[in-house]
Length: 156
Image (cartoon, rainbow, N blue to C red; front, top):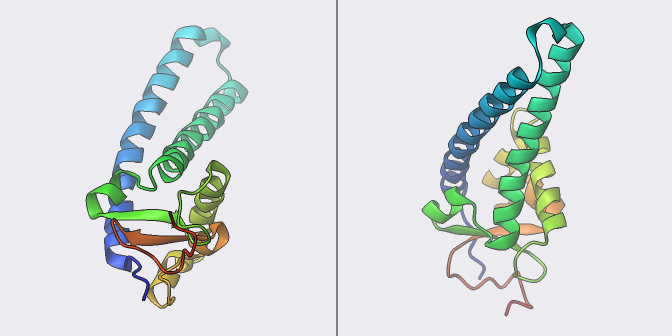
């Protein structure tokens, strides 16, 4: 019998990670905008420049958040929230860590999971393997740390 992590601990883990990434995102935006302000004189600023700076800073900030999740999911299987809540993301096929490309695919699935009333996240409530859409897309499952998982026959 396989053991999969339930919805509520995963939600709490996500909230922890969201707080962390929002803090880093805000620090990044502040520093990026401070740098732009130092490099561009006030008389060089126009609407097009300001719009470009805003889009660039948000794009780089979103890339920073994606890098946070991809790094942790592919290096340890646990972002900070997962570590605190005691769960790990693993490959359903191998039982090992996700590759960086699979972790990126899972992150893209994370974004998609939130589009329609968070249905992709809520899916884990009734799925037999407690998988959200992001897990299904990436071929991942979330298990409590230290549990063997029969869904991963090649686990070492």
